[in-house]
Image 1 (cartoon, one colour):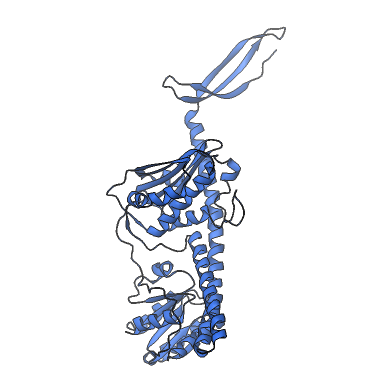
Image 2: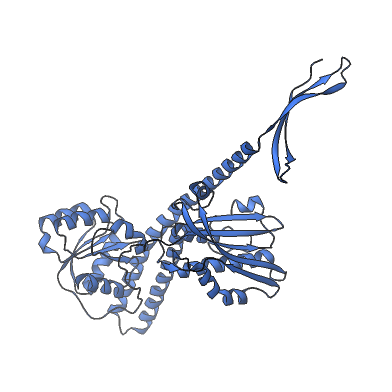
Length: 446
């Protein structure tokens, strides 16, 4: 009677103390009466193959999550861009009305509320763009460990006394190009998440640590949000807790916007942190065991050359300026008709004559016909037929010295790559106020 060939995978303890996967293949040998006489087979060490398969599946899962996040990022960026155009109409018209009704107390109060609401809505758009990874941070050389040490007191008072706070910073004298405000936001969010995981009435430990590590391209593939990261030296900032940990099902969803295991309405949460890390060309790793705890680690590249940026105008939300600074003719181009109208009205309010075009092709033809007629150009960056950067390139090819203001529904830092090499260009983030427009014109026109 023939036996049945079998295969079985199992682990054996290696003499080094570790475990190794083994594949056993064999055939049972039986007596004529069917009783088992023995087994004939072999064992094959398949540990490396199993590990390679595990890494492959991990990378595939990271890629799937990254693709989902990228899709959500594109959606968030598109919504923020269109929403900022709507806010531009609301804020611009409200400020124009305020300037027309300076002595009407009730109207001024209502319009001030509209302006304030539009500005807060614009801040929400900036948060969405940060989540989408489309708002490059305003960076400077930062020592991450030193920054965490500065925050130690704030962290301590935010943590219940029953929870121990352990610090270990090993990056002294090493810097990253980072936005300090965003790094503080990341650290506090991770610490507060750790507090929630342990429980405010429970005892536990939160460990904050910074170390210098070297990451290869293969290792970067295993990190979330590291698509723009390059191999090299990184500072790793980790926040570990001894809390409840997360199930695989929860881990699969923690970076979805508005997903939470807490009460509803907690905002963008970890998805916002991931957006910040992506904006810093870093990466993110999550390790969690249910019932044991979690460790969140962000990786930031060690500082190299300073990041070039477009000249920024300080945000100002003062009341509408009453004095006129107008002189000369401006070429105004925006594919959104309502935005074009409110921009034209705001420029007129500041004393400027304008020639406004919704069609960039027509605007370029007019400029080519009379390049000396215009004293400055003011362009929207995102236009379907001719993008603002391409239109500006065509205009500067005709008149290299013409002052230019570029308007963007995204943060001006996000427009920096598109505008590098254009010389002196001033950027305005929509929605902008009359004061901000006035400052931009003064800077551009000298």
